[in-house]
Image (cartoon, rainbow, N blue to C red; front, top):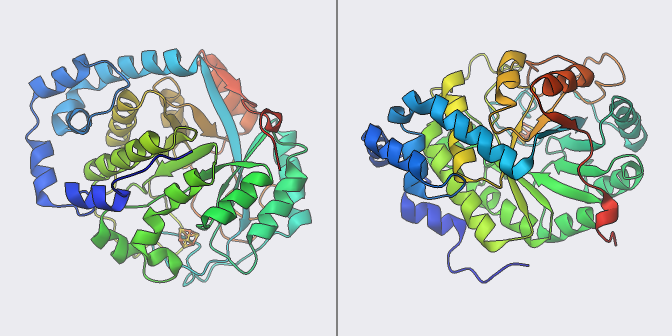
Length: 386
Ligand code: SF4
């Protein structure tokens, strides 16, 4: 159910100057003092205010990471218990009509391409299921002639017998499209704005439907209006100034949470990873390990109920440390090539995986960190599938 809204997210970001990475925001964040950070840390954890988040992501707050980590761990245990959910991505196609120049699947890349038909996708999914997963994320590039709503509906119909939760990270659909896949048993959608800065967006998205910033920004509303249970948001870290991106992302999440109560929001933190054809692309805003940790902790402390998701883009040593600091869901044993679970393939992956451990090994690390790896936290029986 949605409530009447007076302002769109487009308007909110424009009014606050968060759809452009102006000098003004950088100067404000740089001027935050230690006293302001301490005041932000003294506020009840889990509540969002833009000024509070600004203090927690400031350079001044980087000296307070141990205190932020302690609060984040306590808050996460209070809201989510001693658990970390596990999921696996299943790549369906790497043909793409878009030209996002940070991605190895972009249409100008000379990568070997592959599409999985329904039977091939089910075979891959069975391998994932045999590793223990009951939570699967269906991923595809923008391949509209092949990965259609009908394809997703048919595949979900086959997979919901063996998976308790199915989510997608595919091209943007309209509200009816999201309703159709929800009706087929898909209960979550992840969609990244990539960058909230309009100029940066234009520079990295050269062609295809995804090059329309405003259209992309409208997707989470459509997903929530369709009644989807889970909605994942994120920016691709490395494109724009991470501090201003974090503020815009938080405003977007806050906007959605106040309008669509039924939709559980989570944040992902993908950093640019090496991929085919990216050698010549210049990324001026690469995010360090310490900055990534600060971003995760700051969002956790401002959004106590939000999920925090970490993929195998990050190296094992860092993922292991973050298990206790606010992460609620992790992928494991991931292959980012269509067909990669059933055996070696020449098709290109979207990015190079950094954590190559198996699902069982990651589950073991989670246990040793004092958390319970959760393979199943949802069942389609909880909802009425049309
Ligand atoms: S990011 Fe997505 S839409 Fe863009 S080129 Fe890669 S697969 Fe295609």
